[in-house]
Image (cartoon, rainbow, N blue to C red):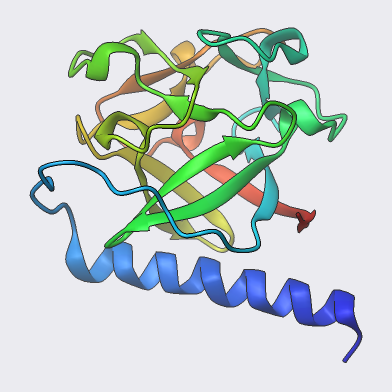
Length: 184
């Protein structure tokens, strides 16, 4: 096997473990304080919405805190690549490759229709997601703090449609294909 094949195999194994853990353990009670994950190789993916074929994207490639997450036509730039960083149990942080910041549910809200943002990684429950395998390589992402899914607003297929948290119904606008983009 080539080095590239080894990296791809390791990424597939890591994603498979996350998938099995999501089905086996479900949601867990919160720790008193989230630990900072140990340093390790990060595997990066572009997340492609099943209903639209468009990628999760940090708006305009911003590196600022509070930059919104949208769907946008896939160009596979670094603002459309997210690293899976193991946090605890069956939860991961999604770290934007271009900024090093985490996908974040603002204010740890429990409400529907809260727009997902990027924010400096602190690995709290509002930055932790469980991957739920739907079919093939499609997964839904469930926020630990709320139990709600990442969702493309109103099932829109338009560029710039915002990504929100919303009650899980596992429809096509809550399913994302993980396209492997490399290790960093």
